Length: 314
Ligand SMILES: Nc1ncnc2c1ncn2[C@@H]1O[C@H](COP(=O)(O)OP(=O)(O)O)[C@@H](O)[C@H]1O
Ligand SMILES: [Mg+2]
Image (cartoon, rainbow, N blue to C red):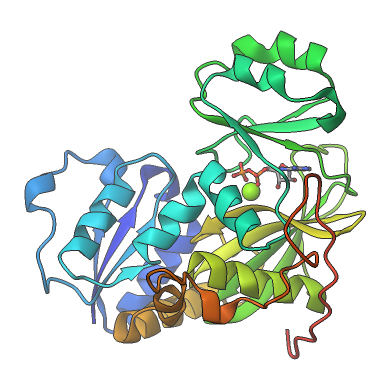
C-alpha cells in the first residue's frame, strides 16, 4: 500500500509515529512522510486524488497538519482518523458539547474567548480546572481553587486563546489513559499533571468493564478509530476529561505493530465507525444506547455513570 503520514516536528523523534512508519516499511509498504510544521508547504499542490491509499495524521493541535488532511479528504482520499472526528475532539469546547449532548460522562464545561469572562462562573462551581481549548500534553492546565485565585491568574491565562473551565472532578491523582487500536482497548495508569506529588508509576493496568463500555461509546460518538481517552474515577463513577486522536499508546504491548495493522485495515476498508457517526441527521444514532450514561439528560456537575455492560477479554 501507499501511505502518507503527516508528522509534526513535535513528534519527529517520538517512538509512536516513527516505529509505526518503520514497521509499515518493513512489511513492504511505501510510506511518504510530510512534516507540516517544519516545511514550507505548496498547499495548492499538496493533494492529488488517488495518490495514496490513506493519509494519516499525527500532529499537535493548531498546526497545519489538519488542514492538509482535510484537503486530502476533500479529493476523496481515505484519512486516519476521519477528519470530522479529529475536528470534533481537537477543540475541547466542541468535544464537550458533543460528548455531553450524546450522554457521555463529560464534566459541565464553560468556554470563554477572553479569560476575564471566566470570572462570571458561579462560586459554587469551584474548584475549577482551566485549560486551553486547543491544549495537549498537559500544557497550561490549571487547578483554580477560588475566584480570587482566578483573578490573580488572568494575566497568565491571556494569550492562551479560547479557554475552557470545568468543575474539578475529585480523584486520587491517577489518570486512567485508555487507548483504542484495532477495536481493542488498553489501559495505562499515569499521574495527573494536577497531582505532581502522586507517587504512581506509569503502568499497563486491567480495564474495568464499566470504563471499557464508556470508551467504546466515545469512539462511536466522535467517529474515531485510533484514539485515547483520559478517564478519572470520580465519586460518582468514571468521567471522561479528554479525548485524543492518535495518542501515544504508551505501555500498550506491541503498540507499533498494532497501530500499523490498524492503519492498513482502515486504508483498505475506510472507517465504519466514522460512517455510522456521521449519518446525516442521525449522527451515530445506531450506536448509542437509548439510556445515555448517567441515566438521562446530563445535569450540571459530574453525571453519575451506572453502566455495567460486561466487556470480555479486555
Ligand atoms: N475537570 C477535571 N477535573 C479534574 N482533573 C482534570 C479535569 N480536567 C483535566 N484534569 C486533569 O488534567 C489533565 C490534563 O487535562 P486534559 O484535558 O487531559 O488536557 P491535555 O490535552 O493537555 O492532556 C488530565 O489528564 C487530568 O488529570
Ligand atoms: Mg489529556
